Length: 181
Image (cartoon, rainbow, N blue to C red):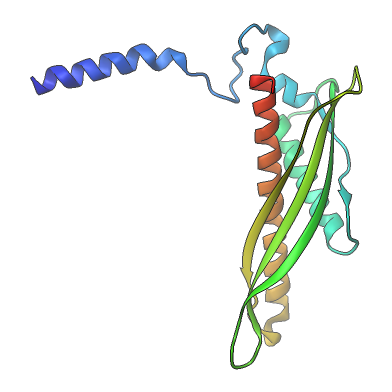
């Protein structure tokens, strides 16, 4: 009796296995031909240099976001014919979240990036997707004697936050190309 139930569940699972399509697969979307593939559309996005709100460390972070996003959109291959232009602007925050009560020395900080983006169709000049995203990551500040470690912790936090921003934007664009909204 129990074996029959397991067999029935496996049979039903086998029947529904063909209903799912990987989001980043090479298979064409519904109603699409060769140009209906998500990967081809993602490769047709030209990511403009990122606009930053503050000088200093943020231009490097903007470059990190752009490089990560370009890699995620093209998979490391060259970009295709440009059909879309992606414009991104970012701002950052760095907040002290934990301090030693005896010395008032900061032990942990929270680094954040806020990004706004707009995807514009080249042929019509019409914005098709726009939105905002953010990332917050924490890092330790080891103390005054270890200033290099503190700077390296900040740089690692910037890189992690940049990767999250790139993933959020990529996921939103993939959703647009899949669902059209």
